[in-house]
Length: 484
Ligand SMILES: C[S@@+](CC[C@H](N)C(=O)[O-])C[C@H]1O[C@@H](n2cnc3c(N)ncnc32)[C@H](O)[C@@H]1O
Image (cartoon, rainbow, N blue to C red; front, side, top):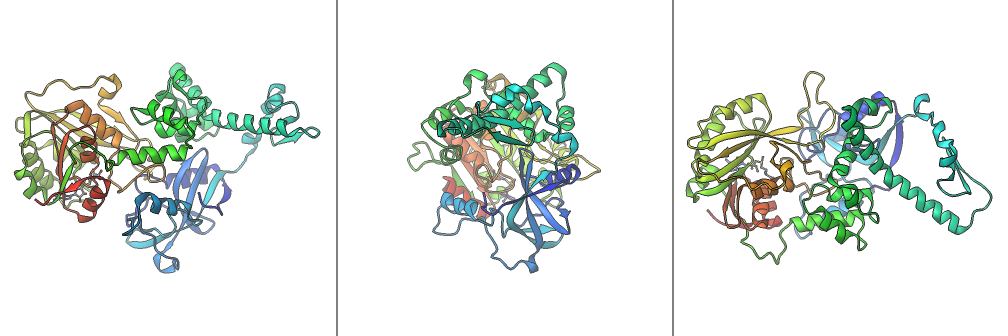
C-alpha cells in the first residue's frame, strides 16, 4: 500500500460511478480501460474496491506524463516475487506509470492513488445504537463508544489500553464474518440481500465476498487465531484448511498469499513429468500430437480474431479429432452472442457437446454500459467422447455446470496476463476428467496455466502458443520448452 495515500469523500452516486470503472480482469498494460470517471476536473480509474472504499489512480494523456513508464514484465536478472514486491511497495503505488489505452490514445496511470469513500449523510451517521450500554462496555470499563467517537474515562492502565486495542481489532476482524453470516442467513430465509445492502448503504460486492468466504468455512472450521483475511486468501483452494494450519505458525495473511503463490509454481524439486510447451501455430502443432485424454484450451476470443466463424471452423475440428473416444474437452470461449453462435455451428464429429457450462466470476464489478449487461462469465464448452467413463467428481457442488471461481487478480495473487484462467478451475476440470499419466493438450497454452495444473496432478501435459512473450512466462512458471 502506498505511503502517501489520501482519502476523498464523495457522494454515493459518484462513489458508484468510480467503483463502476473498476474491473480486476481488465486493468493491464497496453489494453483499453473501462470508462474512467471525472472528479473535480481530473480523470480517475479505479484499480481496487472493497470494504466501502475504492482505490483509484489519475489518468492523464501519455504526452503529459513525465515520470518513468512502468512495465510488469519482469526485467532480466530479477526474480518475479522480488520485482513485484518492489512495485507493491512503491510510494507512488503499484500501477503508477502503467500505460493503457483510452479510445485510440495512450494514457498513463498516475499515483499515489486516492481512496474514495462515501460522504457521511444524515442517514448514515444516525448510529445512536452504538451508545447502548452494552456497546459502552465493549472495550472495557474505561472506554465509552459514541456514534462519532470514543471517550476515555480517567487514565486507564497500560494493560487496559492493550485490552482495548485487542478487543477493537477483534471486533473489526470479526465484522466480516458477521456480515457474511448475517447476509447468508437473510438470503436463506427471505431471498435476495442486495436490497438491504442498498438501504443501509453497504457495498454489495463486499458483502457477497464475505458471504462467499463464510460459505467456504463451516463455523467449526474457522481458525480463531487467524484473521478473516487469512481465510479469504485460502478460501478458493480445495486444501484451504491445510494452508490455514500452516499459517497458524505465525504467517501474516500476505505471507500466506505468497506461500500459496509459490506453491502454484512448480518447485525445482518437482518430481513429475514437466509440462512441455512449443512455439508454434496450432495448425502445425496439432497434427503432430498423439491422441489425448483431455483437450483443455482457451482460444483467442471474437474480440481478438477477425472472423470468429472461420477461426472456430479452422481450429476446433482439427483439435477434436485428436481426442480419444474415452476423452473429453473443455473449451473456454467469450460469452458474446456471435462467438457462441460460431462455436455451436461447428460439426463435432464423434464428440458430443454435452454441456454449455458457465465460468462465473464475481470480481468484475460495475456496469460497462447503460445499454447492456456487464459480462462476468465465460462459456465453457464441454464435449465428451462416445466411450467416456463417468466424471470423477466426488464433491457434488463441483459438478454444477456453473462454476463460480474468481478471476486471477494482480493485487491479491499472481496475474500474468488478462486472459489467464484461475488455477483452481483448471485443477477441478483436470481432476474431474483425467487420471494420472493421462495426456492433456492445450493448443492455445498462453502462460501455461492449464499445462501446469495438469502436471501438478501428474498428468502428461503438452501445449503450444504462437506468442514468444507468453511462452517466456510459461517457461518461468515451470514449463519446459520443446522445439516442434
Ligand atoms: C486466451 S489466451 C490463453 C490464455 C491462457 N489460458 C492462460 O491462462 O494464460 C489465447 C492464446 O492463444 C494464443 N494464440 C493465438 N493464435 C494462435 C495460434 N494460431 N496458434 C497458437 N496459439 C495462438 C495467444 O498467443 C494467446 O496466448
